[in-house]
Image (cartoon, rainbow, N blue to C red; front, side, top):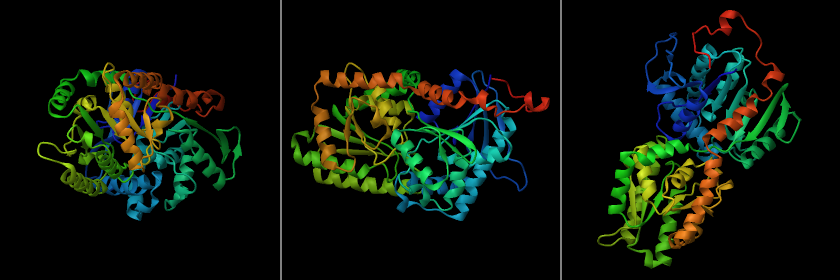
Length: 475
């Protein structure tokens, strides 16, 4: 039986996505390969240390990056270059030869870790655009394993991908996959239309193509959350204490706004919508409060600092215009809350504004809904450009560029009777339960492995290799 090797960009970061990976591997078993979140100085010509840990449910293989790789490759090339391109803002992208060099070094470190520990019939599940070059690097190293790659980000429309300098090397690496997964139908269609316009290929079906002699399948796999993780968060002391504190100190009609601190989050439009709401419906003055979560680690330096400063300025201006003694409309919270504390804030909020201008899935939306008290749930307002909008029946869908529409949605949400809120919440939870993180993993990995035996991609190798040179436990 083949084993699973999951490859992601940061094992140490305690996030909803990291919790999903942990839950999936805890159920399926496997090996998690990732950066350990630490930066170290590496002597020239000295191999990077790999730290293998055997766990009771799954194993981990981690390694450090250098400071330059983190700053130039991770925060630079990925988050100042690739992030804007994938979020339809190539005008904000900043690329450089130094950033690309360190981005490649990061991927070389991943490729080395994979090739040293992968067994012939393991399947590789590589996560997101941080690791695109890793695909071709492991092929160049001789690995013939099945490789699935998943885009957590939206795929740019038209020729947007070609805004990346020397985009061909990334495209050629993607074409070394056996399966490419996307968050939405739109993202997959964007990819297929683009790749067909740039390469000579044979369409074997609506979602499968042959290119460079390799059959590549594409699929849509909706990322879900882990409801066991949600239950843990609900029962934690930090969640309960934070929720109680919020309910004691904040208005009952509290609005929640969060997301990444970057240009794709649409935060200024949300604040404009609040001002429109207060002008059009002055009865809300003194009765509502917008909690804007703006922790510095919610974005990517240095852009996050710039966005945070602009956000604080807008919040101060709004409070100055509409605030009065004992009440102000916006609280901008720059404290870095734990996941348990965030869960308490989510539970106390009557309305959640998840209105990015462009996003992959917006797991915050699903977490907000799942954390609600089903007897008295809050209301989700969701951007039509968030990947989750395709299947979250029960949310109020808005155009994130339209403050008037967002203001109307907030007014509607605050006035919904309890029965309507319960009905909407029940619809949303039905989809969240059905399309959870295990459905996501099961559906993509089933698609990746269904033709593995027929393809015979993993030839028989020497006994030393087949039994695992590095003594890794067989899954």
